[in-house]
Every structure is written in structure tokens, then in C-alpha cells.
Image (cartoon, rainbow, N blue to C red; front, side, top):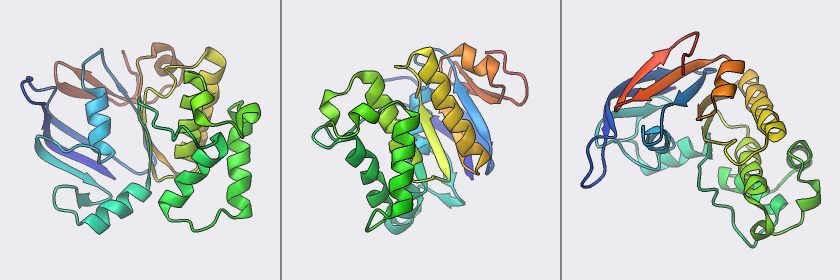
Length: 226
């Protein structure tokens, strides 16, 4: 599903943030991406989310190399992704409900059917946002906005979830609430790539880890020592 071969990433005037990354992720996998500040977690996730390109190397999603994929193929790939970036990007004048519903329209839905409406309402309830349902996004706290971003990604039942520090603005209760949603999505078939600095999550919910250090990646299959 996700294949990186010899991928390096740098920005103008900087040394290599990621250096010769080789990585394969299969359908149904759940992997943490961990490492210190500046290790390249967000850069890696932005590339997997098709927002940036590798400086060198090959990145493939769903069997398609992103460097040669047509614009139509890229649009199709993006409809299969649920991306939760650190910069939340809600539309400030839309309500919580409409920000979540918009994700379905961007995936290609022409109307929001009864089943989709029920799923939106269920996510709003699970994430403790009932009293914010009809409030514009600009009125939300950072933690609330982050939860809306998670709901926006999950409502489309994506094949691949890419989450960059999705619990960073949450208290412990909502942290575990969000992790429960990611685990349920994974058990329902979604592949999950989740960057985190939260050692408690990594230690309590044992999964495969991609550890970034000094621009290089090591994958720990069973017990992550992060």
C-alpha cells in the first residue's frame, strides 16, 4: 500500500532531514512514526499524504509511483486518504457539522445521505462536540478543532489514515478517545500511520514503530523501545 525506496528529503539551504528511507506498509497495518523534534516525522507524513514530494527516491501509494501518476490518479488516491495534519485547516466560517460533511463532498459525494448524516452525528457525539455542532469553527479551542479534524478524516472511512500528532492538544481522556477511534478504524480495514511524541501511547498500545533518528529510519516490529 505504501512503498518508499531510497527516499531523502531536504529543504532549500538545509541538510537532509530524511536520508535514504526504505519502508513498506501493507494494507491493515498500524504503525507509529516516532522520533525527537526535527527528526522528520511531519515531512515523512506530508510526503505520504501527497502534499510534498521526495527530494530523491521513489514513493508509491496503492501501487502508483507519485512521481509519474497522472493528475486523475492523484485525485483518486487523495480520495482514499484521511489526513490529519498538525495545522488543522478547518474552514473558520463553517460549522463543526459542515466542516466534517465537507470531507464527504471532497471525496465525491453529491449528497449527504441518511447513513452519512448518522455517522457524522456519531463522531460528534463520541468526540464530545455536541454543544459545538452548529458553532462556526473559529469559535473552537485548539483541542476541539483538532477533534473536528480527526472526525473530518474518519468520516470518509479512508483506506489510509495519516495522522500527525493527532492527540497533541488533548487531555488524557480525549487522547484515549481518539486512539480508540483509530484502533476501531484499523480493525475495520483502514491502514494507520500515526506520528506521535507521546511515549505513554506507544507503550500502552503496542504496535509497529518507525523510529527516526539522524535522518535514518529503523522499524521495530514488536516491542518499540522509544
